[in-house]
Image 1 (cartoon, rainbow, N blue to C red):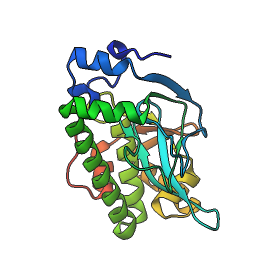
Image 2: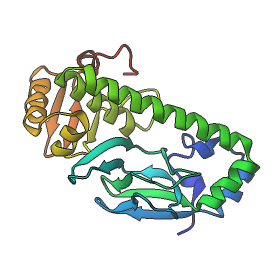
Image 3: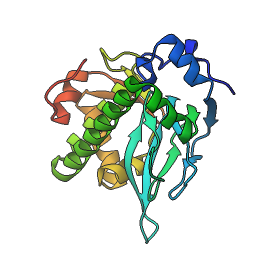
Image 4: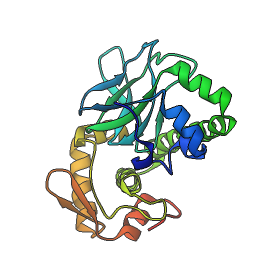
Amino acid sequence: MSLACETCPVRDSAACSVLTHDEREALSAAGRTRIIKRGEMLFAAGDDDAACATLVSGALKVSAVDREGTEQILALVHPSGFIGELFTPFAHHDVVALTESKLCTFARKDIERAIETYPALARALLRRSQEDLLATRNLLELTAHASAEARLAALIHDFAAAASDSSCHIARSFELPLTRGEIANMLGLTIETVSRKLGEIEEMGAIARKGKRGIELVDPALLQALSGRQSADL
């Protein structure tokens, strides 16, 4: 399926937003739209032919599996996120859909050519890589030092930010893309602790749970305070 840049919901926030209309049209000619279902693998560890992609909608996880077969979730990818290791294969990481996800995919050679042709795109991808590195460092710091309550509150806040259609505020309601087991895996907690802390955060009045995975932010400022972070766009 060919790309439809004019109606793309992340056209103003993805890395390609730095391109002019003509440059974007030229790049889109090399791309394709792909839709993958929950649990479907986009890239596998050791995949030498993995493409590069921009996530249009949905959510992805980047994970690794140790020798005992235990999965460790290393990062999450939200809409407008760029996925792909341009110059090396995915030696140790899998990229898997957490929900049905829509992506713009490009062969690695086409992205490499675009980077050489459009310096602004190269700079945008470098900034995005730096942001991803910072997010990974923040996650490591969170899981190493923060309380279980702060870890979970911060993750909920991040999901709310990712679910928003604006950079000026976070979404007031959304669906959790992770199961409680996956949340426990990512935050270094037990499933029982995740369930208990979710209930406590709800009892405090910060959130309200809706169905199996629905979350409504009742008091975003309280959620922010529970996360231990300094500031947020509420």
